[in-house]
Length: 315
Image (tube, rainbow, N blue to C red; front, top):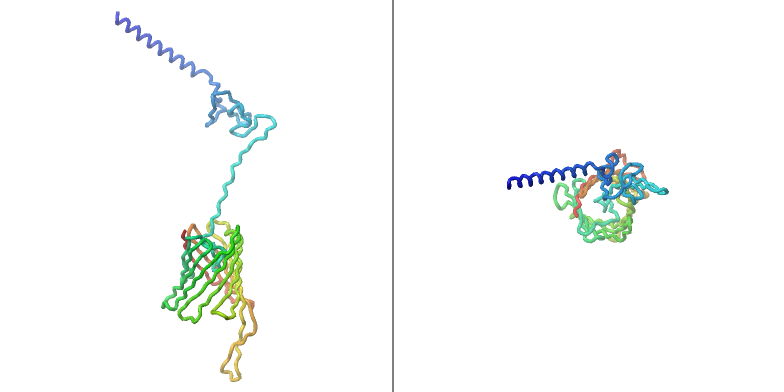
């Protein structure tokens, strides 16, 4: 009797399992009206379990309250304009020139930021460097390293103070002194300079006064230059200097054995340097050619005198 009851229980368990499998199979074969049709749905279409509408243009599923297709922007109601989402174009940011405080030689109206600076080499035999003691005050200097005794080397340096900065316009004043153990005086130059524009395109105007002591008449120096180019690796540089000088001639005495210099007029000299500046994040290099012209005529230089420098900038 007990064996019969166990068989009946086993049969009932199998019947229940068969019924559950039949119900699940029937549900799987029923049409699902809550999902997009296979021919109109696309990967990524996820809609809530509610009625949906198909876009008349792309055939993809949308919520019934939508005014526009979430996939292609097609309007669902009359009078609406098709929405087109345009991705903003990514503009390539221009890198700043790390040597923004100078052109080839002439300084610009900018000063080094506080606790930043540079050091490097020009023309192989000239070391130079600078440091920003404040955002508007820079101290720079350098020395020659010509082969020979130390007392024949030239040491130079001076301050630079920024007076004005607004937008892309800046102005500064400064001075440079030169010391040598064999010179009786200390040659110097005081200057003022103004810069207009960004490093990718700016104009630099300057004026300076030479001196070789105090109380002497010295010439004025004017400069004009600029920098241009939107590359993140190089810029075109141009720099010109203009000053007036006395034209002298030899006058012999009646004996013909001695002579002296006599001023016969004044002339203008205007050397010009053209070239490129190559730079990275913290290093820059200048390569230019200097041509010397005067109001008396050119010097006959066909190629120009090379001007080369490499500078490392630290932050």
